[in-house]
View 1: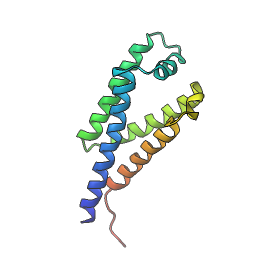
View 2: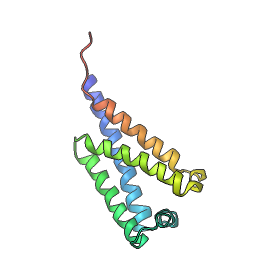
View 3: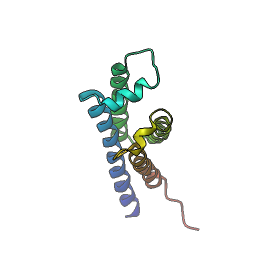
View 4: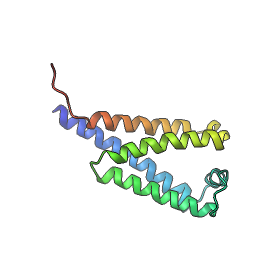
Length: 130
């Protein structure tokens, strides 16, 4: 009973986390390229056009979201957690003004990181009681 409940919790958390990545990859990077996304990319002075970088990053986020939903592998969860942490630091260093906006990267990334922890805890094998 407990094992089935933990699997349900992990699945719900995986779907929620996947939808965060799919949404952030598709909507502000591919369908309607956000001026904030462009500005964050341009702050890095990449040698490639910012809209290409945005679309490539968006595709990567969508792929990660699909991996989170379609597999029982744990590495996509760890990859998601690492990316969320690194991207939060990136915004703090290169676009700190965005940290003050509504629904900013602090609240979004911390909530998504919490989903990573929930997945990790729910999917961890139960240890025998001693």
